[in-house]
Image 1 (spheres, rainbow, N blue to C red):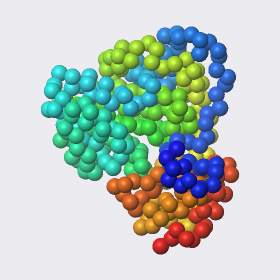
Image 2: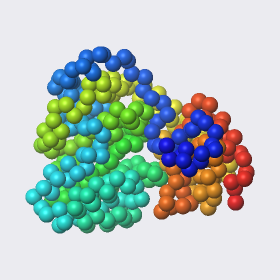
Image 3: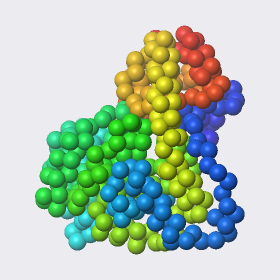
Image 4: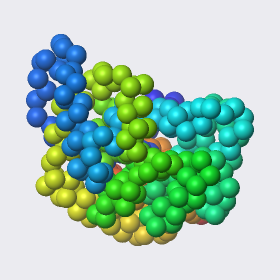
Length: 329
């Protein structure tokens, strides 16, 4: 673990608040032994996509393709949209700052890739990519603006890929998922909201022809049996989802109060993490690291930190560390 090397004298156990993953994992039922000993039945994948369609508000399971995580879906969708063109002629624009792997995926595909903080500039690209709500600052772009952008891009043969990895934490459902069309694909991540990132499950919600093409490329066994079992159970547990949204919102408020008490300004975030901007951010990062608490810092934004939600006894350790004034300017 990098933090252990950086802070070898820090107390243990470590508290990892550097991720945007829920600290409350979904309590799934025992996984049948056959999920490990046999290949999944094709019907199980159909059931999973149908459950995800209902959960996310898509028209039908035919609009979805399930994958072992959403990261590999970006180049697959782009190849479908621009496969008849030389990669170097495709202009890709990513609304930034954001999750760095999307720009990396576009560059590896050979696209002319720019990162911009100007939303209007996205319409000049062939491929636009927006994370909404955004990671790491929680920036939220209205669905109406995104839908308008998708139609502008579609009219000229372009594509908007919308990454809604953190949308599950919001009470308001996505309008984009219900209105996917040629030129618009929406990515949904399973692991963050359900606190189960390790099972690697994600979805592309898009028009049926593209969804079918993605399913064919991924093959019939891209999602292993254990992930099918857990995903189907969690995606249909509406009561758990509603209760967890309320709990995460309450805990985000609790974290805000703790950070404010320490003199820190919360500049953004989602219910899964808070985004702090402060001139002493690097000193705070070091202070927390020496206390055995890892948060996320950003080389290109040295005054910013992302701090995830603690759980259980971690709250007291974080509060004690924040109350120690030796990190403050």
